[in-house]
Length: 109
Image (cartoon, rainbow, N blue to C red; front, side, top):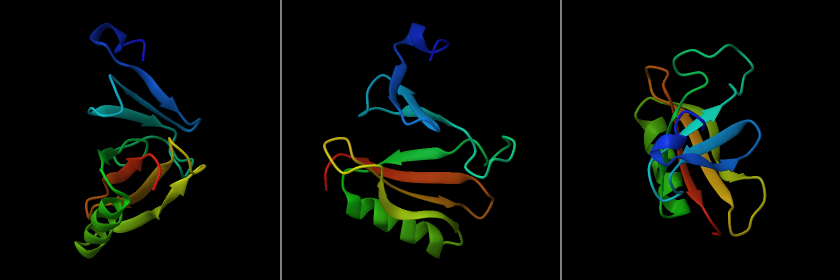
């Protein structure tokens, strides 16, 4: 966040293994994380495209479509952490080329 602070970005949410950096949770942001599998960072491992959805059903639909188009599962839709006003509902998958994507919704069900 130090690099991006001059352009208005800050750490918006730090969940330990992953931190979200940007101007607001309602605007495009950067997610920085430690690779889930513990392997070294490389394209598709330690980086991902995160797409914010307005409803949990949209998270589910995007995940299902990604899998149907030849993607592979990296984490089925569900709440990561606790339910509540900042609940993190997400699904993870890789496209056929190995790029990791996340569809997520912040907030209660």
